[in-house]
Length: 432
Image (cartoon, rainbow, N blue to C red):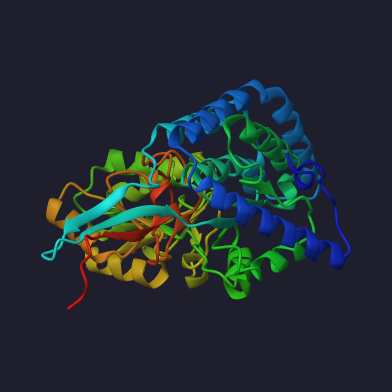
């Protein structure tokens, strides 16, 4: 394993930090070249071994994570942030399952995506290839260290991991486990690297290395993502906010709607696919809002509603346009009564972030119109917004959720971490 990976540093002199980042990028470029031709079975065996080692190391990983959680608590991080940071045996088991699922998926590298024989006899094939070197910059959630490493290696990419300082001990322990297994399966030792310093200036240096890093993926708060998008000299895959909506139509099953809203808001309020706003058709407001308000209040949710909402949920505070535009990442829910589907769609277009939006309805034409007119990375019918997730959608895991349209959108798994090239085979043809 690289010396860089085993020697975490609090900070470095500016000259040494530039040298460190230069070394990481150069090592990753070499590793990416080697990894592009590694056989699928070697990558899969590494993934399965990493999953087994992860479970076996549960006790030591929890101990490293406890150091981070204690520090985060002492530093006053929010409850949602601490929840994202915290490892549990169950979350470790799920992360291991994600690695095994990645191993079971088809390898996109070398896959023929399309092909044809031209009238002149030329054989044309469109073949999947890795992107190359990926810089992954993220906050909290040490489980995404595993997701990113697993997805990048399986898709033939070298990855440079730059986790948040709040998860430094957790990420260091996870990286040591993952990188230590690479040589056993004939994989480049620098295929997975961790930036071994908490110095934030390292991010800026790496973002200027577009000659060796092919893609930057920021995953965290809006300020981090905007900084990366502004400074990067390579393409960036991102989403800024997760302002997700649930629209309850007049034709909704109200029991279903209540269950979905509670799940979408309360299961894990600090994640990007949690619901932030609920819109209710006016025809069911008198029937549905009192029971929904009771259920949400029972879960500790602070409701911020429009005047019509407050007629039926008296303990709701008045909602503002700022609330509708805010990703609270907490047990705070904005709520508004709308006159019809058109107004609901108009609200989503104005305040949404094109991340995940859901409709609850038993009316098929209404659902079809919602799906057609809501331009989000994921549009959900009669289910929780929480399903916009790589693991839940069968991708094994995700390295992030993109609200961009180029080159990937939604949960980004193996397929989204590859590009393609055309292979043209002839028998001496020349262009006329």
